[in-house]
Length: 229
Image (cartoon, rainbow, N blue to C red; front, side, top):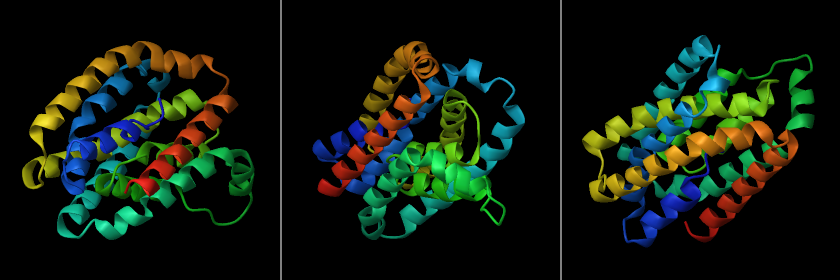
């Protein structure tokens, strides 16, 4: 529903003894099945979004590829130290969305959404935990539309970023293929359930409580990553 799968999957990969970088790339590869399931279950919300998805997915794929190149060519330790702050920023942005949206609508220069998608996709390709929360926050801030639509578009756009990164990881990075296969199988089973219940819940729950719940989940993930880097 909100791109918080890594709250469980990434720490579990670490807990079973997979090194951080290998856990990161394994997580990215495996969660592609979850993105596909989420998109399949949100066909109602994605109607009429074709041209928008093409533009934003192209930007996200480029960013995901850049992030993947950065990960395989530079040490990850420095970036991982700032990840909890980025995740927390996404949660706070969701909590303060309405006043921030009023500010964003005022006259003057505002960075276009495409820049936000690009930088978040780079982050997602490098270290994907809660990239969905950051992308949902950016889209919610820049666009006045129902949250279920924003959430569905976010899932597809983030999937494009993950796909570009995963292809490079599969060719060059230390993917733990057994763990990736098991995690992907679980994601596929979860997608069968999520395709029926996830979009239904997003459509029927009141928008503000859902947004607050997602934000609090992001803050919980930030604390988890800070305590267990």
